[in-house]
Amino acid sequence: MKPSNILFLMTDQHRADTLGEYGNALAATPVLDELARTGTRFDRWYTPTAICTPARASLLTGQAPFRHRVLANHERNVGYLEDLEDGTFTFVEALRDHGYNTGLVGKWHAGTVKNAADFGFDGPDLPGWHNPVENEDYLAFLAERGLPPYRISDRIRGTLPNGGPGNLLAARLHQPVEATFEYYLATRTIELLERYAEEHERDGRPFFLELNFFGPHLPYIVPDAYFDMFDPAQIELPKSIAENFEGKPPVQRNYSAHWTFDTMPIEVTRKLIAVYWGYVALIDEQIGRVMAALERLGLVDETAVFFTCDHGEFTGAHRLHDKGPAMYEDIYRTPGLLRIPGGEPGLVRREFVSLLDCTATILDLAGIDPSPAVDSRSLVPLAAGEHPEWDEDIVCEFHGHHFPYPQRMLREDRYKLVVNPDSVNELYDLELDPDELLNLYEHPEMRPVRKRMMQRLYSVLRERGDNFYHWMTTMYDVGDVDYDPTQSGLDETTYQASERMAVLPEERKSA
Image (tube, rainbow, N blue to C red; front, side):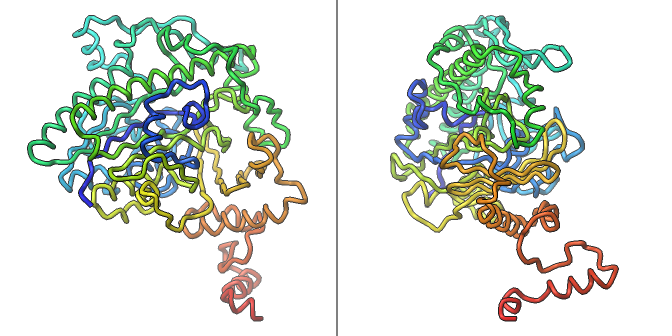
């Protein structure tokens, strides 16, 4: 296969249900909907972890977070690694080694000391988690065009438990669209695309170009046309707004208080969702400018196009905002679109896939061995309409944000298991309870499901080398083990137990 050009479009904290192609009848996302109609829509696309920096480091490396060990955002880091270790494999360095131009415009947030340029990306340096509206290049962009600077009003925020003002959730932006940071990012992307297209035309050099928007991450700060685009009265609230945290890990109730949900009227929640959808519409329009440039430059037929995000967003679901230590579908299942040269249009795939799988897919499209992306698998066969064997479940992980909080999740067709070693485990029936309101973990009739899924999760974690399984060995029914779970070996009891457990499984069966 001839190496493909690759355009990678990425947002931050983006719910799948904001797109028309994912079922939102009110959505204003014609550009992304067209990408879905001309490519492949993945209905079970998950993030490996619902936190920015670890997810982005996983995309770079094709490694699950526990393996690359960059486990938290810099802004809330409590001692984890903040940058990938020297010598870690990344797809961008592999692409450059194979003659690719590689560019990244927008949010980096995959490390603290090392920036995108350190890994071989062209493009402006834009660190941090939110639109850096004081960035010199952005200010120069405004000055060159005689555009007004950033200014906001109509701030929306709640009240913290200590009586202080809550996090800013949304505001009205007093700039024209052409002055927004989103417009700026699309403009810089088009400029780099034109440069790469010229080199591609002149010497056949392929390119990888990544456009990373900082939105629709909160706070949702958009001009009037988008702040008021959707009537809050038309917004259908998520059913999980009825969450009462009964039988749930206590941290969820605490997070709800941190995000000040109960201090704001329900009408404010409707408005927040409406503004969030408006933010998505603004981004869709800017992606449309980039897609139009791709067509103008004659590159559509030889360029693969991805669209996804790092993770989802609550926007009031489960009486929460942002993301955090709650492995609900709202923040783990995300949009995922892929159009490849020669691929079948209009495909809808139900396999469980991950942001992690983008790494191997990028390498595959470039004609590079994807095996160094050890936790990743190419999506090219799925986008080509093939039917390879595929896992019938997916494992996700979380390590904390405001504080360490280890979690692992196993999601299969009907059920989801979440293991919280220092709290309440969770089990949801997504067929009968798609909003994940009823925790079935302790229900006696669910014991067979719980046991099967616990043993499956345990085996996957052990196979991966994720030492979280040590929590599980002594606390839950994980089935037979072939080692001393106490890891002591210092007395007869544990030694003899270890000897018994070392018997091969087939020998135990025949005994």
